[in-house]
Image (cartoon, rainbow, N blue to C red; front, top):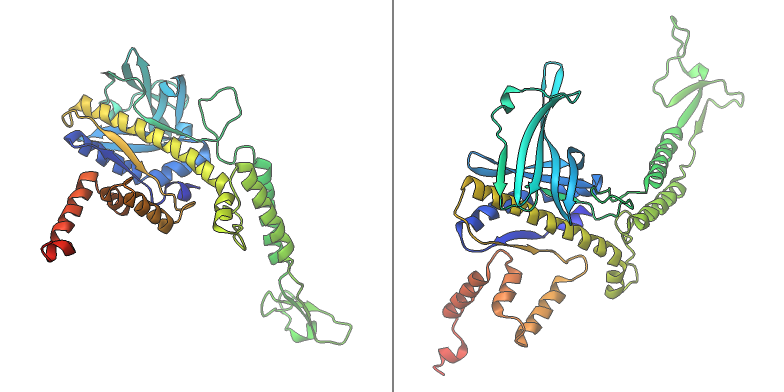
Length: 385
């Protein structure tokens, strides 16, 4: 699901000023980790991206959901929380650094405290220089929380749940089936029962020396010197059950067939294939909404930190996401639709060029089109018409 959600997709900061250039670097740095963020979110229920400034540059820490405690929210915005920012072991004892965030009257208060394993306050020299801060003009905590889109079916809505929430017994059955398949292969290995007279006896132990574990010493009353035991392995029955359990898990999670099982494409039309992927695409759309909201919060935090530390002059910015629709769309069909829209005057050539070159801005695309026109004159220009 992570691969389907974020592969061949991009995120950019739009604008033309020094602040946009800085935030675009922050976005690029975080987007390189987007698969890790998404997989942790779906696997554990949530993921946290915490930006921080070091040596005049903004960096990001990716933390699992278990390292955040949410105290209060205002709508969808977290206004008070505690994050386990770091830990260190000295001797036989372990120490933790906690960062508290609290938003009051458009001011975020950020404070740090250190505790030992028992929760008592402690002092660590390497963390002594970290100062508490109060930053004005802020309406949310300065980190991004990516919460799984799966409904936790509880009264409280602070934390997310894994994508397989509620499927624990079904997953246990799948593990059990894997174990049965493993046992089926290991217990039904070929065995050769050879008459005792074919082996030498160890004088010290009195046991027969076997050339390999394939052989067993036996006293064959039938008169045959060798008998082979090679039972059939019941692969089809076990794998049929495994595929059935996979299909049940897909339904429980809320995706279409084709995630764990083979997609149903034989004899299906393109329209039927797309319809069969609708549940998966609906889940992907929810995941992408979470990613957009989380990345917007992350860039917001980076912008606040840039103001606080004076990293660049202030400037406006916008976030832009270009999601891949290859799961439900054919690139050739989309290109045909774009060309039809351009011929009808609904799309410009610059927009079509941007579709081919997603990293170009509208101005850059138009400039390249103008350059192409200059280097490749029309037939009318060539004959002087």
